[in-house]
Image (cartoon, rainbow, N blue to C red; front, side, top):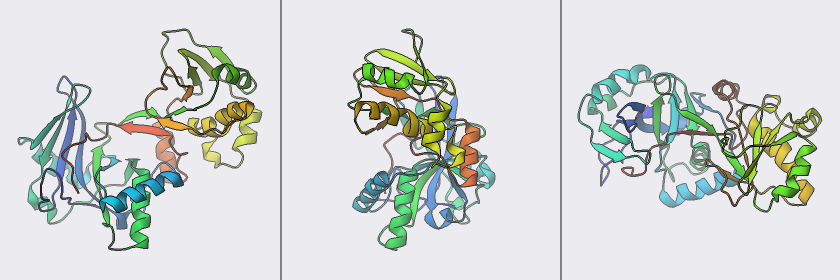
Amino acid sequence: MLLPFHGVLTRPPGPPAYWVLERRDAAGAVEQRGIVGALSLHGVETGHVLRHQQVGEPQVSIQARVLRERGGGIEPLLLAAPDFGAFEPCVEQTVRGRPDQELAAPDGGTQLLWACDPGWTADPPALPPVLLADGHHRLEAARRLYRAHPGAVADRLPALVVDHRRYPLRLSATHRVVPGLDLDRALPAATRIARVEERPPGRGTAPRAGTYLLTGGGRAFTLSEISPAALAGRLRALPPEWVELPAAISDHVILPALCEAQGIRPDVRYTAALPGPGEVGLVLPPPTWEQIWAGAASGTGMPPKSTCLGPVPLPGGWGA
């Protein structure tokens, strides 16, 4: 359940309330619209929140430490809803008024924030099942802390639920940077498990489905037609639903093969941006929305760091 939330725009925090957040592009067109509230940790156990990505234990530990130090979450979780359901009248009514806050976005657009009428907090509307788009490690850390120490941390986290049907989230991949990997030595190892072709300069860095870009030193090489034998040998211990997912193939097939050939560990750094010119990295194609929803619905989820979904709310105006 999405509960009223206090802490936005108020110092000290005022009465719990709902807020409507809207992102507009530089031309003033609406890119994203959502409602800000607090996600109850009790409701997470009912299956109402679909988590599409598995978590890594080191990242959960980091988030747990941050939550303990702050006494709760500050940055809102990002949730995608098929529609607003019973919240629709609240949102439509609210955006007719003057916004309470306007922030400039890095892309030249703006983020607007409105306080909803307090009457909506008396009987919180129900939401349809929602997809957790961003914040898997924060949510898991909060769940574990609350189960272990009820009362020591809050039983809810701030959350932004966006109308994914009308304003779909942007979907891209999370890429990999491998410190210590030598590109020239990696290319022969890559040819043993894939078809390798150098990409002409200026052609762009967006790989099509089923391909990957090995980049470094201003050069880029397309890796395609990954060896079925390599896939079968290295993916056999993973869920069968993962065998065609880019993050699984990257992390369990391609990068281990390249690193093993150089005798180094694949200590990967994950990035939403492309690897820099002084870095050697692997650029992934994004999964499809069908794969994301299917993994979330089945409970299998996706490999860690599979996606980058956004835009996320701008910093500023949030409080705990």
